[in-house]
Length: 330
Ligand code: CP
Ligand code: NVA
Image (cartoon, rainbow, N blue to C red; front, side):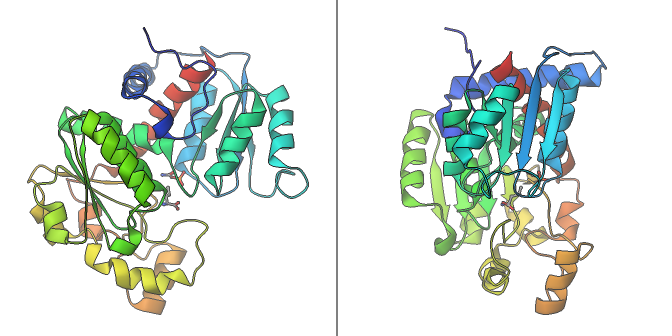
């Protein structure tokens, strides 16, 4: 039977089959071609979507806005603090109100339970634009980028460096297991994903002829990798007090030239962004002043190198988000 995602929410990749993810990647490629050839694709004219952000964003917000506008829809953006949600109105009530006005709801915020509750009550598709636990729209952009750069997904050796139990570490482990990539989390044990998720991903990986590995050893984790991926050391919503400990824990896992040399010569470097690769941001400058660290999860040299595909990856956020919105609303 063909894939049909109409009416579905997109909350986490665990809810989707490998075939459904494949369908979304193929649809993303089609939308990318349409955009590149300036071919109009206002397929969802007359519909409206709302974007709820309880945390800040550049890529995710802009991708949903441009995707919505390209598809011919009306788009409303609500920033943290400009809606009643949570403070004066429950999630369930907010969901039922927005579901009467809009055809789809994007939510970026804190717990996965919140986005699940929105979806349970809204009566329209809800898209997870990042929670503390998962970042599923980022996954499609990452998979598409790997496929574009390496030509395939199955059998790719993918290594994630750093905080492996944040939304990115969790989501990439699921994405790799679902699509046949060998996933290695290279991180201190205290920052490994929760055991239930590791167990679940190992089961999924076994069905897809790939492996999920975890190691604290940088050499072991990076040797022969096709993709080296990292994320910031302290995620949105975490208190400033964790910086000192996190820097100590993760400095040995920084992606630098020596580390990239363990990977295959044609390996690519990926990052969901934003990234602290220099001191040209207020937080970057503040951390440099407080802890004497001028580059964090990745050195500027690697970030700016030919192996780095981070801006292609960022562009793909828009094409893939468009595919998710279209597939669930068409
Ligand atoms: N990668 C990502 O989600 O970026 P934003 O936080 O800018 O949306
Ligand atoms: N782990 C990061 C991802 C940002 C896209 C965060 O949650 O801040």
